[in-house]
Image 1 (tube, rainbow, N blue to C red):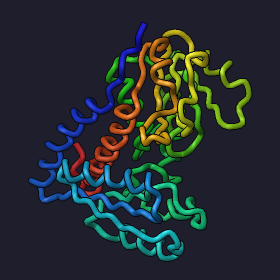
Image 2 (image 1 turned 90 degrees about the vertical axis):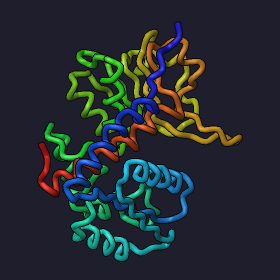
Image 3 (image 1 turned 180 degrees about the vertical axis):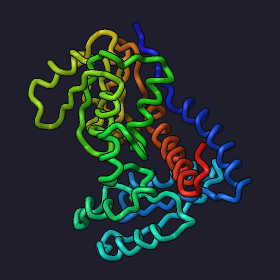
Image 4 (image 1 turned 30 degrees about the vertical axis):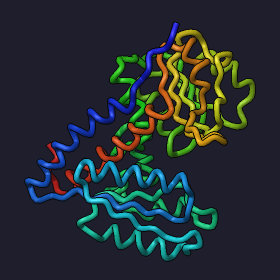
Length: 286
């Protein structure tokens, strides 16, 4: 047995082709979708992610504004920029690249974003809407995971879903989306005990912890669906996930590769959220 590959890269390209047409439709109406990204510090992974977002905006003809600040930027200066972007009617989406330097209060910074421009879906308002099954913007990575499962016809109803990781970026919102699809959801984290006993019961296993090759074949059940959300760089510079891909694929039914799985879908969903924000703010939603 060898798992079927869930090809996030191909799916993201298909989605972006559709979004490209939507962007042109908006431009024909005099609307120029615009995404503002705020990057603080010199974290190499964050810089790479921002470059991916800039590239996607360029491909879709979405206006991209990137504000780069040094590591020691004071919170008051960052808040001032967010306030200005909130007031700028030309800016549809605001994204604060996480993680922020430790001296900055991440919650206070995110709370400052106008929820109508929170295309990452991390403000308390957007997360609260998600919790009440009435989402405004769904966080991009969880949204991308659900889109991939749908594309491959993987039914979630009544299935045992295990999510390893509890961040507001992935773990918590993904758990809510799985629950919405009538899966029975278990959330695991660094304090969970007897983790393999839990993961071996999962029909769908989603991993987002940032530990290279953490999940092996002894930790999954035969025929499980494996969603690897982790991104790690080995000493040789190779990008790998949280799953031992070659070992686990022999036992799973479906598996996402790293790279080429969840990552491209995250970017595609950000572009989709940005277009939705432009339509919402210009009152042209169908």
